[in-house]
Image (cartoon, rainbow, N blue to C red; front, side, top):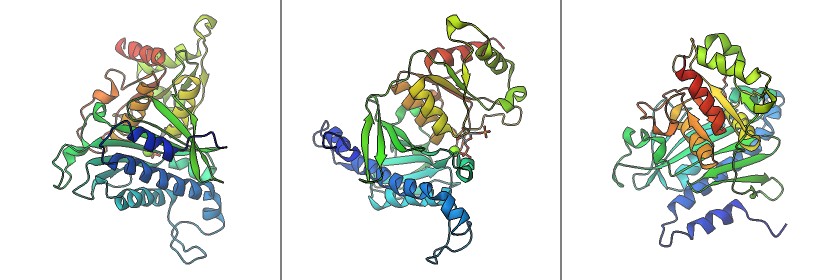
Length: 331
Ligand code: AHM
Ligand code: MG
């Protein structure tokens, strides 16, 4: 176990590529690492907390107020990021407005602290998603909404934590994608998946097919295409849908496949949020050699208009995203 690289070492090594850097960005990543460990520990005993120690709203045996896990995760990330004094603001799925922090900080974070939270009660994988930008307003002034409404192409880093059969932190700073698996005994994330790339030929499609008749003709045609028998093109594809973006995305990144959350008749703008769900996943999949689109436009080139903006989202192996775009264009 000595010939391993921990996430802490990896962050320091990468910082050394930028001589003279202030270390602010490294401290930011360290804050995310710490909060991920705390949330991971809590997620692992989620069943105990809700079923044995009392449901949310009641007190636990130490007399502390119980919190819902997504609120808990939100608090942990905000606390860890605030304590290191490295960011000037946070936008979170859990908060209607962005939060102003330290005016001297150079970075902002947009995050979904616990995505797929409907899966908590049933012991299925969930995740945290984060996106990091340099602020555009001057250091020393309060953060502004414009700092958060930058295109995904401006991200300096993006990542997710998956709380699954093991906990993994996967992130990119625009120079490839690396995955770290958490060893709870040692309390460290260890580099287990260096230079992750998505297979160029995919076989999995992931969509909530309950929405088939609520989707457009192009999406319906893609699902039919995915189910057609054509061994020459690897079809029929395999359907896999967990209902946790992080988990569905992570599997498809490793095995090759595509994730779809289209516009539907009841979600006319799609369901997933551009700033803290789609943009970070788009940066990761592009860095891994894949593609992310809203059906027409590259996700990272969409100009955000509001913090909680929703978009249609298709991400994964490039040829599969291309096929979706082709069938949407033919509608
Ligand atoms: P959430 O942020 O409220 O947890 O919702 C986002 C989740 C994604 O993780 C998942 O891919 C999607 O919603 C599932 O939606 P649906 O249940 O409509 O298939
Ligand atoms: Mg979410």
